[in-house]
Length: 493
Image 1 (tube, rainbow, N blue to C red):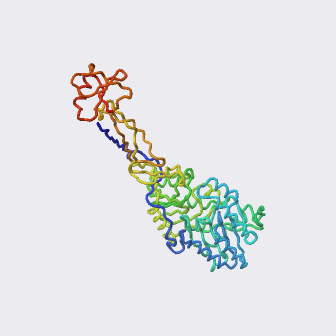
Image 2 (cartoon, rainbow, N blue to C red):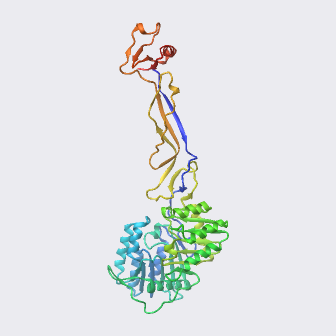
Image 3 (tube, one colour):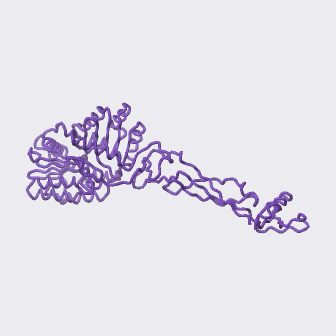
């Protein structure tokens, strides 16, 4: 029997562009260095920053001021209640339910459980902690006994007071003395001048009455913020970027392409300043990271990044605001400008993140440059991941040769790449089998008188065509002679 032949054609797609997106360069891992330098924390599974805040609350004697966009950490809430039971006056600022509900609809970094836990803990605090809220509140910090220059302590956080304190990639800073007092001044201003609702009892919110007097306007040299009447944090960010001459390190959860701060980063790149951006891969940052990468910035990402910090050769800034209008222009946000050892600790952290973060953004990567996970710039981590593979094997239908003696002459079939969903192969190996034609089902043997004299192979007729039947390839010369003589097609049974 004339055997079929197997064929293969490998389509090389290594020069095909992947399109702008995130390339995975390592596994996503939690933060394991939670105290990189004195007074600076990174959030991590041990919760050392949260423990420091709980310890401060447990040591409070007169006043504790807590500000958090989300307050959904049970241990912190219990520490606040313990302080209240000791007759410490405990005050809290948080975002309004409307703002949290809007965020749940728009941001894949939040889920319904966070909102439910936030509401449950507020119900526990009602009547024991004086809680006020507003839609634009987004800052995260704690101040204890700010009026006492000896005992005063403050903690500025990039993390919401929920499980982000041990699950996310976040930063925390300890403040003392005048800086803690100035942080308290921001709290007082927001409490008296910008809060909209007050929690008077469980589930009952009432409008905030006018303040009995005008509180001190925050104006410290190190604590900077965003208020409805003053945009000192915005001015600080723009000033730091504009003065940078060697390098800029930026960690931010959100970055708005049209914001003036982002445009300032692009201008810094045009001035040959080295710019490195750390962010969370998600569609909301796609326009900004695409433009910054094209301009020459290095951009890396982490699945859980939420920290906001800016570092130049002059100083470091840790803040609660993203590089967005809602944070730098319209929110209630705070930040602290650091120098010396604390600034060094923030810079060392960001440089380590630059090396260790699992994602790197590329706008011009080709398939041949990467193997593994790839996230298109406009896709989310939850459902947009695809995988670049080295090879995909794809079987084509069998090809029937026009003649049993001409198997190698069959042209390549039409190749329609169909990789598995979510897969982007560097090569597609198409395989198919060329089979000899078979004798038609209703073919009739040719009568001996009509066959060529001396042939040893049976001849058939069907549909006006002659067929030479070959049982094995030993008779190939004879089959070739008959096919030529009779204009016949050589077939197998």
